[in-house]
Length: 607
Image (cartoon, rainbow, N blue to C red; front, side, top):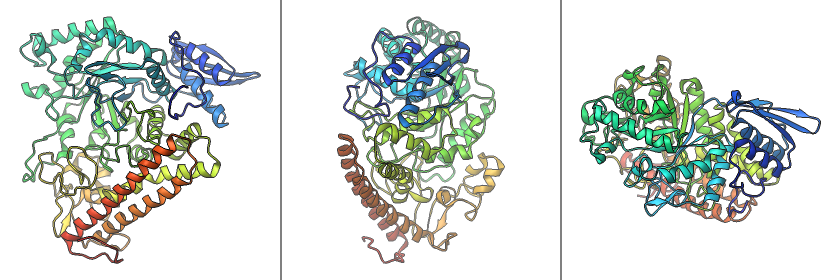
């Protein structure tokens, strides 16, 4: 491929010809380019699933219209790694989506890999060849929906479902042969820009406007996956303005989409972002459950509630959102964030599969019916800013297909496909990535603390940055203690969980260390299970996190990555080392000044 980066598809040859418009044709092209002999049989009834059988001179691949393409990529990956391909597979979730936060001006909200791949200067602006390459990457790991614009819809992006429809259709045509359907984010109040004097979801004129608009959209893009909506959140318009609940708000849009086979993805990131820090009764993590749980069974069947994996906002570590355990009569999607907003911003290394494994170990996979992630994509040559951030994108696709993936196996597969490293260096890279999340957690916010970062840009340590703001993100550290009591005797957040999970977290003694300060307010002299005091554990974790980062830098220096990945990774590692030292020194100094307790090991803490 004529690109200036390394992806997990280095074994593929020339770019996909633009005249290939069917998944089976692309599958044949890819197999021929990859030197794999296989006969293809398309059986539409198999949907996205596929089966592979060994034959005398190659393989027999059969599957649905997209399934044969997914199966072809499995054959190619197996050849590249020297493994035998799976005999058959089908995805756990029918909707496996990426949410782009791209704006029409070319900026990307929480984007750390360059400008938008799709827009610039208030209009569509993209490289068709690069779009095909992106579609190829997504199809290779089985992702099938791409929402191309920011959930915070800003003018003129609302024109995606109006005057920009011809251009949207052209882009959809590029992704369609790869089994990838486009979705767009919409502004809930959009009818008011076109002569309707309200956006009340129970108003007949509003409902009719959206019905008419949906008909216009689907005439031009008949396979549009649907609409994504962020309503009544962080200043976005929504049904609360009119005294309506979110089932009433979502159902009106869902009914407009239903005749066309479209779905409405409704984000549940709704909370009071104007909280008074003096208010001891409001607890932001409780918000999503309070807004939605009582509405179970009231949503149209083409509504999907998109719920963040944790109750806050993609912090270094959070418990699983209680809303994901609730609402058995409602279709739910779990939402992850590949863009490392609070986890290093694609500068610091943070491999996510171990985190996902923990979530799905605690949350049965059948509690959710769809999956989404905020992308880490941008116009940088390597798509993801840090070359290792591509491992998260690759692994997310594998997880979306099969949530029972083994983190180390999928990271190793990505490493094998992306780099031809000697065995010892491949092992070193895999272990570096496997340990990166725990290391980042240690030098930033261990024990379940969050929000100790700079407001607005969310990078670097600022332990008081959000403490007196209206966002409801407090740790309330004082000279005696730190953390929030979220048990039945505190804010009551814990009561939103099933009883077995309430018991798991109800006492400091039972609660896992990683979440102790999320669920409990503890004195600095609280003695942990290993005999250390809480304050000593805070000191130790931060010093250990810095030391582990320094060790990561040494390991990385010994891995012979190809250029330009070697130079990019080295430059970002230099920045990560600086970041880790700042976190270690600032957080330890913060807690030392509050507690007055010296480090038992006599290490330097700055006063």
